[in-house]
Length: 310
Image (cartoon, rainbow, N blue to C red):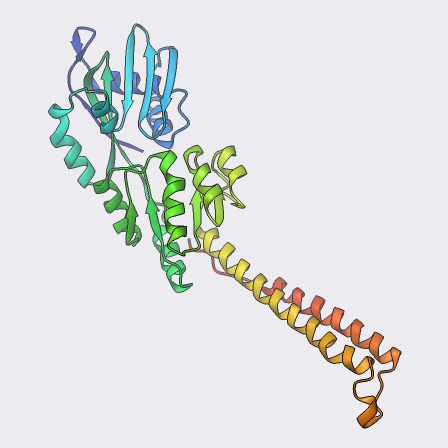
């Protein structure tokens, strides 16, 4: 959600207004698949701004976009995009720091390699996020935040959610590497994501959980897809998975127990000492009871329920 629009310089011979700055940024972001880009476009549509045609578009993974709008090259993205391209951002440095400390993500806008303003967005925390983190903690699981945002923004968001471990300023290509690092520490990692940039990390994780409201690429990469955009299903999926595994172990125990006890008796192990043999009818009944016990035990899953965090 766009929260601040701050024009800075002049473009096309006059100082930009908020609407003109937003219109330029939204035009450049028209073909973007990134949630921040979509939020900028949505803000322009809410103001009923006419977006000029885009002649060329290029997405820079984790940094921003570059597009030809009219006769100008428009750049929209994170401050590091402009640092890498040697475009000075010093005039907006104080605003960038202030907004980042408020937990907002800053996108700078440049026209023809000159900064013309910035747009700040609030990465709104899902209402149930804190409860989900607490529920995961009760399940004995640690939570970590992996994001491309700067450290100040990431720290603010993680603080609101109650997440202690933060990995910020992680480029999309490095998210999978971050997951691998955790795995090399002997941890089993579940990754929750919904964007194109999350797909490699979802694949790398031991368990990839995609939100149903996410991109097709993320859904394809995840092993589990939750319905909708809520996070409450994360704890439900993990609890259900643990319950299923518990039932499977019980079933295996009883299946092996029947065979371990019955096969030696059927083979005559007790006959020399006690004259006991196993009647084929009893053996068949025992096998049927074994199968029945496994089925009935599995049906207990129908009574499984978990309270989803709201």
